[in-house]
Length: 302
Image (cartoon, rainbow, N blue to C red):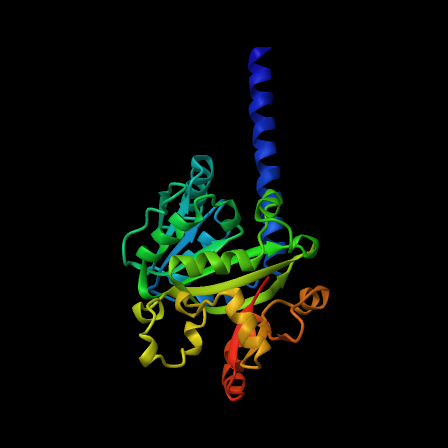
């Protein structure tokens, strides 16, 4: 009898495993229809021969696709802090005979990536889980090549855009303005931002930010006497921040214009009187026209 029970147990376990694999495959095929994988890879620079980091690799949805994109001459570093996820990922890589992936058990404050070796780093639906986000960003900045790209994609649902960061992370999402500020503090410069990059089938949107390690000149203020207009790509520099009282005085004297860089709905819900709406994804293309007014440009996002 025990032999029959054992055989039944093993058979049942195999069947359950097969069901989970089948469900996972269906979910991944569904994800292909809305995730915009090719656009994410283009932003990363995931081309043959590239070295890419998948930070928060999880079950390997992006890791396996990145491995194919960079080819035999490229390398993918798959980073996660969860040992069980990494064990499942290793099994998947072995089953699929994928040889160009290096699996790394990261720490909550360190991705443990090789210094100066990464062409592109991807964090997708994982940044909101990073309690030590500034330490992680510092580690990523150290790992990226000077022209390397950091791509972050995260979900946010409309009713929760303006709640606290803690409340958002409890819902496993985060608004872009929190991450833009994190990147500024970490010394990254934002190259691209799309508030509504994708729409999830069950509701809500995902935004995308593409950033790069800041050039030294973009984080150091020039002497006042030699000050020059900042390049469009440096508009998030800490040197360009202004005190709210000083901003108010300039605006009241007609020497400044307020630019609201949020989305249309948030702008309509509440804004500074007299402010103009220019979403952050379009601020660079509008910079030249704004500069022609001769007034200071003061952007805000909350």
